[in-house]
Length: 432
Ligand code: HEM
Image 1 (cartoon, helix red, strand yellow):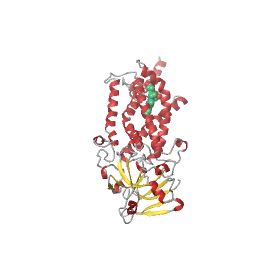
Image 2 (cartoon, helix red, strand yellow; image 1 turned 90 degrees about the vertical axis):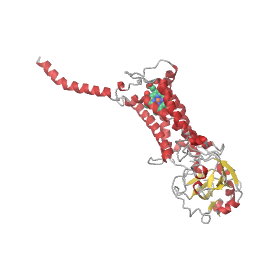
Image 3 (cartoon, helix red, strand yellow; image 1 turned 60 degrees about the horizontal axis):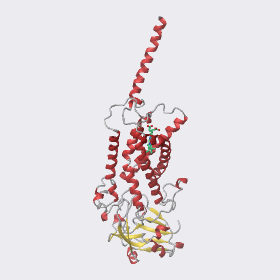
Image 4 (cartoon, helix red, strand yellow; image 1 turned 45 degrees about the horizontal axis):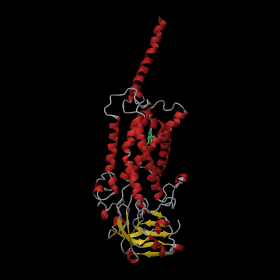
């Protein structure tokens, strides 16, 4: 009898703690019963996964192409990721045809990225119970799987957040956008491919079978449904459609551009940029001193074979043979203009002036710009040789405005906007 009493006295406080702990755990996100949505399960996760499989693969490819468009192998000034090593294995000389190539590539990259945001969020919602499993690692294999999920989820969020910040807020992260987004993309995509390969059999079975497999995502204590799984997909699809409809117009003119409510730099208003089309940086933002760009002060310095140098004022440039090119401006932020009518001196004619009569080489372009990236940029020989590549002096029949690069700017077919350097001060031709 005495022995039994002492047993009760010892057990009571422990079991209260245990019960409280168990109750707490049952109400915490670490308990499977905490997640009660009847929508969660492999079917919904797989549908969203398959959409992401196509969408993110296309995002990755267009992102890599956008990187190649900067010609990073050509000159250190174009390359924001000099330590990329083998990650640059695929780089190639960016072509000049079709002249809308970068416009299409970057339009797809940014519009698709923004459109996929609701799908990504829904996918994360559909798998959120798995992110709370305890213990965090049951074995070495489980620990490795959890690390790969961290890279997958963290990588996805990082890429989408940095991309949106770059487009909308001119970037707020510490460090340069380019290396972070570039290296982040490789980490994320590697984890993404591993995940897609591992989950494909389950995704395939779930999409083909009508009966739901009882995976850990299926709630053990489901609440009553308030919406069907198809209804939830319609909701996600509508969110994507809304983002698409308020973004895609930034690549077009007229009425469509007015629908681009999310476009940066006043992008929904086609006439918001000086000269009737959009710009990224104003002359004031770039630190251009009007004194330096006046007719009297400004001289273009052109350097060529064996240091041969000529200096040309605007009036002298206007005496050279002038040509017209219909080319767009396509920004890395995803907006682009339709073709504008540029008029100026062919880059290959300027190369000929300094000793490269037959085979124009690469060119190193320097701007008067004081602030902002890409004050200096290099263009490849194929870009210089293209007869549509100009040192433009006017656009759409009028002199360039200060914000469009007066006194002279580069315009090259299919190149990213930032390689179309404004306020040009010096051109150095030669193999870079
Ligand atoms: C941004 C891309 C993606 C992210 C962030 C992501 C995230 C996750 C996470 C965190 C889990 C739970 C962990 C696990 O079960 O191992 C999961 C499960 C799953 N994912 Fe993904 N995923 C992505 C893309 C994909 C793709 C492309 C597919 C298609 C093959 C896919 C199919 C699945 C399937 C079938 C499951 C298991 C569902 C279940 O157990 O009921 N996911 N995903």
